[in-house]
Length: 370
Ligand SMILES: [Zn+2]
Image (cartoon, rainbow, N blue to C red; front, side):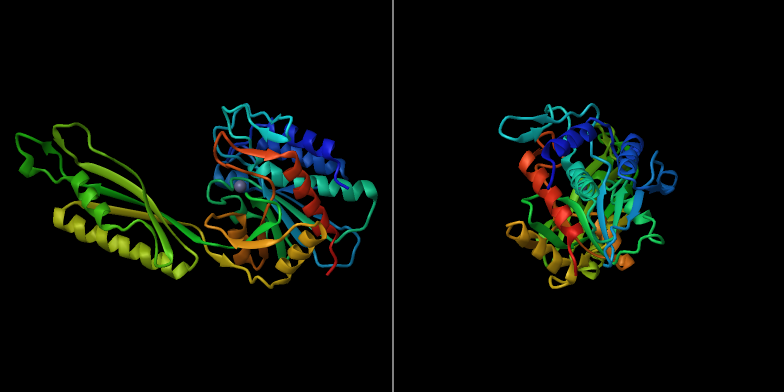
């Protein structure tokens, strides 16, 4: 069974390693050596160089001796900021927090620890298990940049479990949206706001008009947001320059693209009225996927939960994850809850119980037979 003390020690040790996106070097080295300690040779790809980071994705194939299809277990090595000098404080009631000045990093070290502890149990028992592929990615928090360049030529699995979801253990997500971010740059003409306002083209007013016409919120199968706006130079100057950013999400890739085009039509129409120049940039961060709830990968997850006495629940999530990158490569996967709460904040926490259960879930899935 899961060794709780060993698991918590590992969690504390990994939390103490700084590993913000693009700076996963030390984390990658630590995980490589943990795997090596289990007799597992992991290889690092060249993703770091491609994305301007100092570490690649770490991948390993482990033949557990059972004649079964391999399954990919994945988690990401990076954390969001503030992430320097993190430490895990284990409270008497089993809650684990940071010291309040940084994130904890249970997103996604809870997932990393679950996978490593499961392998440790299997190896120390000398038991046979199904072929397992492990992928620890870099830069998940920057729109899954690492996973998009994962070594898909080496990965044999057609199914995966991405340990990277908040919520109770037993919850998994089979569906996530397309996420498109956009930036609109408006260039007008500066003028003194009192001496000669009529000779200016007001980029800030133009942006305000555009934004007032873009409906935000959740409707018609999409979510739309304006996230930031920056422009103008002084109270007495007709603003020459304004930039605003936003995003669109939808479980239907076409709906997301159509909504984006609608937004761009509004931008062009209003900018033309003002005579402002427009530059629009957009980036499809991740594409939507939808894994059938009755797919074997989901059935196996439900069976594993039931074996552990957990009530499995398969849900949709509005967040992207590495799973969005695996799906187009022909890998059907679920994102599973692994013990992270209040992620991306200094109030982030996990519990000893959650970490134990997540490791047990990884173990049960690795032991599963089809
Ligand atoms: Zn995460």
